[in-house]
Amino acid sequence: MARGVRAKRATAVTDASIVRHSALRSSLGLVAAKAAQTGAGFAFWIVAARATSDREVGLTTAAVSAVMICTQLAVLGAGSAVIVSVGRGEPPARVLDAAFAIVGVAGTVLALGYLVLQSVVAPDTASASVLFWLTFLVAAVAGTLVIVLDQALVALGRGSSATLRYALGGGVSLAAAGLVAWRAHGASADVLMACWTLGTAVACVVGAVQLRRLVGYRPRPSLRSARGRPLLALGIPHQLLTLTERTPGLVLPLLLAHMVAPEAAAYWYPAWMMAWAAYTAPVLMGIVQFSEGVRDADRLVSTTWASLRWSLTVGGLAAAVLVLFAHPLLNLLGERYAESSAGALRWLAAGLVPYAVLQAYNAVCRASGRYAEAIVVGVALGTALCASALAAADRGATAMALAWLVVLSIGAVMVGLRLVAVLRRVTQDAP
Image (cartoon, rainbow, N blue to C red; front, side, top):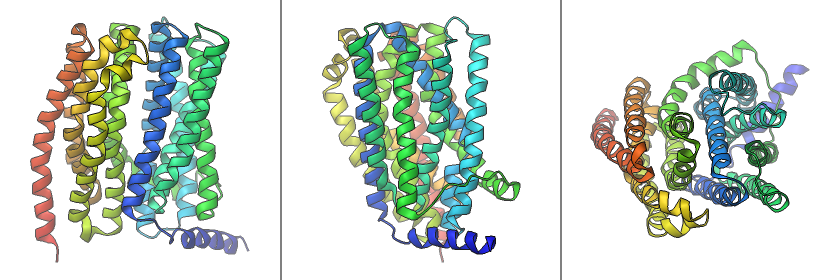
């Protein structure tokens, strides 16, 4: 009887997933979702900057970066493993049960580990309040689950569903910050963190509801080794590659807050956050490119060039807006932010082109199993990016961004040449 129920459940999810949206629709839906999230996030930091001091804003940005690092570590490649497993025809329900269980436990452990480590290593910038610890923990776990939700729905051909959950999550977070700013000027970092966490939690809940309504999936997390081991074996190489992409941007605000000054992190983070809004186009196009490459390897070359064109088109439009309106956008946070970070934003926005090339290369390496090569390249490039930016930190955010752009461009030229060579080999090996 139990076997029959499990088989029926797996079949229901598989049948529902047959109604797939096109790769382009999924890509543009994800881009729209991230645009909504970034827009709400930018508005959140505008409210935060006017609700409290630069120091509290800097500490909050450092905490948010720490949460994002925890989520990137805790996901353990589960989202990529879901894409590969579902693309190979495995029952989605069984794969998702294992994925959600793994990342839930990992997110909890890593969040608690970070909080304890920060209290020991940097007690002067650590918060001992119960509110901060609770919201940090919730943000890390919910954020990790959202990453898996995003990639699971991409694998099931419903990536465009992300728009609703990110719009709702961002709106709730912004409304909470606005209420805090209205009721009490000079809010502490833990209160701002709680507002930011609320939006992440809402996005996670909405995503779970969508997964059930769109594909009939009901979460039943399982830590059985027979399910978890294959998922980890697939996912960890992918996650190591993802970490090389995301860690430099996430760890730099932490380094600035603890090694330079919280104010330095406060001035750098808004520029990086807005530039990341443009960078998400190639990131999300790369996820769909990877998913389609796993599902249909014969179209890897054509999918790669199409994804790169769309990355440059959509991301380039966003980057152009940032270059043209850098000063007025940052001025919304305050004149000191505009004076300190407008130049940095322009240089970072110009990095959209080399970043798109890097994402196309990484997506091809994921789809073709060239993990080791891409990981080595990513570690070397990420180390160089952080080192160059920190070396220029004493000259301000603009000098940091210029150093970042130079290193990223050099790296893009190298991986671009390698990308062309790999795609030529794929074409030659095709039957």
